Image (tube, rainbow, N blue to C red):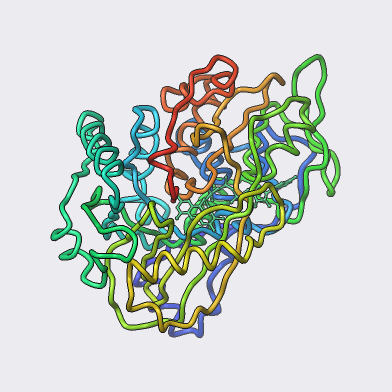
Length: 416
Ligand SMILES: Cc1cc2nc3c(=O)[nH]c(=O)nc-3n(C[C@H](O)[C@H](O)[C@H](O)COP(=O)(O)OP(=O)(O)OC[C@H]3O[C@@H](n4cnc5c(N)ncnc54)[C@H](O)[C@@H]3O)c2cc1C
């Protein structure tokens, strides 16, 4: 079905005829027996991989298989913080690639992803953090990522509702990235899905992969709840379920699956137009366009697949934010939800070939992969099409065996 371009004229035309002429944003085809490439997982990373396979390499004989609904995993459950102020060079390169693609993604996809480069402050509340973030600011300058270390008064100017003299830790400054921000998470998945469908790719929902088929050490296809489907190349992009899929393909991953949750308050008038992350007390907050305060904190302290998050974490996060922003103490919380995040030991992703030839894996984004979606899709598509990508080179899974960690545990302290 041909896609209708979204424009002010299309909206006006449809308004006059009761919005009866919009085509479906993406098709729901029956699976074919075989595709050149299959991507497992219709989250942001899987869909972006499919999109750049088509756009950058002309590979459009692609199916994206999703066991639930499109964007129903972590992509539709995160708090949407986008930034690229990481310490290590390979991380800065992929996150900055993603951030810069986000700047024009609405125009490129002809879908409003509501990218809002409102700026992100990561508070420094101990001398150790001041040293750590000063170091990151210097590293970012060398990497071409625009960040600066700012003092407490500038923090207060940017975010007047903050308390600089918390009961436990004063605000000593912060790492400020002015072109960081937020975007609408569902729209990112929907926009990529619509563009993939428009290129003739198949997005097949309610199709769970239950087995990975191979012959002579090479992938030949997958077994699904909707039958067997063959492929030449397979991309596994399933976040918290990566360990299970790797087991089906016959290898093990250094990944732990852990619950991470978020919550939003009732909507209030605009009071905060930046994102603030307070890593020492362990909480972060921004305000959505609807006026809700969007809140998150740490991951569960134990492995699980519950997609909920444990209660004591909510209490800890809210306590941390009430001391940072005393004005929220009287807000009511509206909703809470959780996702299953895929954590690596060095808090960096895995984008890699695997021991099964033709099978590639993209996972390990843990608590902070929404911001990376366009860059990760770009690199993963190049890896699958050409067997090599400068963006993903350092993120191979063999680094854990060889001791070449990309340590981002400071940049990813609270991690979003
Ligand atoms: C509460 C919370 C807050 C977060 N906040 C931020 C933030 O502010 N900024 C940020 O950058 N990141 C954040 N993240 C992390 C971010 O959401 C993830 O890193 C990112 O969305 C991962 O995307 P993905 O496409 O890899 O995974 P997902 O969106 O989870 O997609 C994977 C898909 O694979 C499907 N799948 C699994 N198994 C199978 C199977 N056998 N067959 C078929 N399909 C399968 C799943 O149903 C799922 O839809 C947060 C995460 C959570 C949970």
